[in-house]
Image (cartoon, rainbow, N blue to C red; front, side):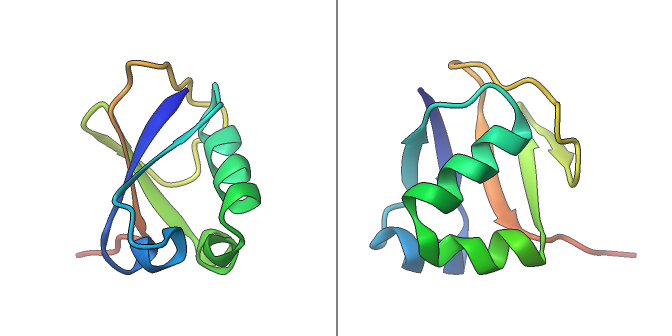
Length: 81
């Protein structure tokens, strides 16, 4: 199982839980499993999310490997300039 930390407004769709667990091996599987387990997250995931994996931020790295000991943080799409 992968522990996923959720930022801010994303927690409203997990009954306020800041941390959830899913069975996943890639970035895409994390998103798919979260959308399945917490349907309220699906619209945000479809709009776009960023994931910090072991301190590195990814946007659409679908096949980035995620291990059970990985530090995973999911947040709304991050933009900047």
